[in-house]
Length: 173
Ligand SMILES: Nc1ncnc2c1ncn2[C@@H]1O[C@H](COP(=O)(O)OP(=O)(O)O)[C@@H](O)[C@H]1O
Ligand SMILES: O=C(O)C1=C[C@@H](OP(=O)(O)O)[C@@H](O)[C@H](O)C1
Ligand SMILES: [Mg+2]
Image (cartoon, rainbow, N blue to C red):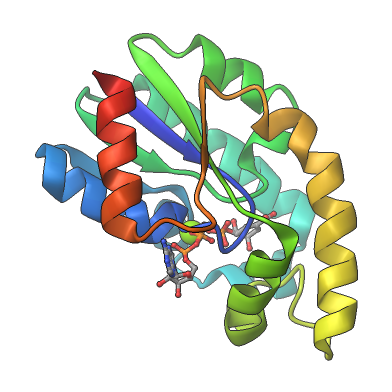
């Protein structure tokens, strides 16, 4: 079984994914980490030196590789992964897999991302919280079209990591 975690930047895909993998005894893959290893470079460096179009190309390649690879896998995608090309179709059609959208409100994403925006090139230039919130609101509205095609949608706003993991496990049955 492959479990894809989807959601906006800061929704907890990487954080929850790692813990979920331990809890289920599954292998864990963070797509951004795979890209960083392949390019021997951090995400901000890749964006700066090669540009976003290049990043999206490598992201697509890594997604294809992950889909071909072994079973019992938790895959934390990047926030943009499902939203480019036909990546979401690939995710939905992957054999023996499911997709889970970790959904959070704009206000909560803003709070989290304001502290961590330097690692995220798409938002690192947004100096104040109001500008960040405005950007997230619009961006999330556009991306929701893709995230909402997930098999499961979990409202994470008032859930602790443990509760999110419990909810995911109960959805998997
Ligand atoms: N359920 C949660 N409750 C509180 N903080 C969380 C939760 N999930 C993730 N975080 C924190 O939010 C931040 C972003 O999480 P991260 O996993 O990097 O998001 P993503 O990979 O979706 O961009 C991290 O600092 C993480 O520790
Ligand atoms: O939303 C996006 O387009 C991106 C999200 C990031 O991953 P996280 O969602 O794990 O922050 C990373 O892939 C890159 O900075 C682009
Ligand atoms: Mg992540």
